[in-house]
Image (cartoon, rainbow over all chains, first blue to last red; front, side, top):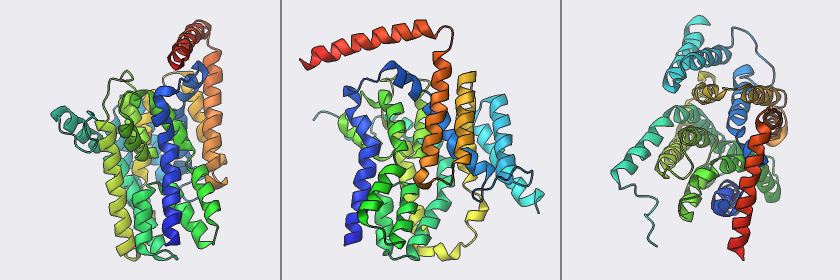
Length: 107
Length: 265
């Protein structure tokens, strides 16, 4: 029973954090500086999530080597995306390189 | 109450958008699958009942916070500590909702509550990719809702799988399915690196996130994002033509402020 209270508390906290700005949205006017800053949120946050996943897939130490399939796959995806700007092609190429690297090259 | 109910995309265009959102998030669903299974497996090996684990996935729907909570529960942390940790771990969602807010501001409040509940890292990435080419206020909620609901159901499915069969998939993490998330995020980020200030912001955030990844409660990620955003803002302000655009933006803000002041009187 008490774990239910714990979990529902977590749920309320998470929901309020996520929805607060949405719900207050029409009453909030962001100053220009904040709007400029928010324009950088997507590229920074998505990059900040993926760089550690690609560079150190097993934890804290960097694996800057061709034997790291996450890194090789990520570099391939970056190259395909920079050249074509096509999302589906990028995802397909990145996954293909990653799995070939993991299952074939490294075996 | 003349607003359409959130859960029924009846208009054919709405259904199309709903399906498009659900389709575009499929790579993220693949990427989240191992985490759902691992979460379920960890619940089964800890002090919680399996249905507590499912309740957590159903009600909280936040991978990182759920994993960290399991660790804290196993370590007998107090509820206050677990709730405070949930708050800190999820703080980055404030940035997500602030970024997307102009695109949902025109929707009825209950749509905004629903979309807010579904706003994970992955849903943010996919929704933003959809919104960024379109003017705020011109897109309905159905694409966002389709992506979010697909991700939500996916999380429930893989949590159940982990709770029931987790012990049968010991090597799941080494498969590297989470790379699907990396590839999808790259496909979203790289086309936006169109100017030096975006490139510099992304490199700053990426490098610092790597160096600070051992910080607790994802604070390293949050700090790296703030540093990257700061670099981007500084480069924006130092652009030669930024003075003019800043001036017009300030005038715009002033007229908005006047409007708000007038409305509140």
